[in-house]
Length: 89
Image (cartoon, rainbow, N blue to C red):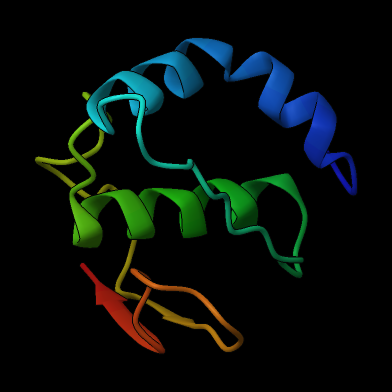
């Protein structure tokens, strides 16, 4: 999926519809994206850490368990719901 956020979002259309529905149609849906070093395996690990720690309402999997070693995700930049540091595991 490297570098192609539009492709990723088109694959996640079911999630997008659910997020828009959850917002009641009056709000906007914003996405945060970032480069993750280490390839696809590390990207999945970071995604799992964010889902496990942030517990987004719409995600139905990955909220109850984290199947990786302790993972630290540091973020920076402008975003409303992602803290600067997440420790999962």
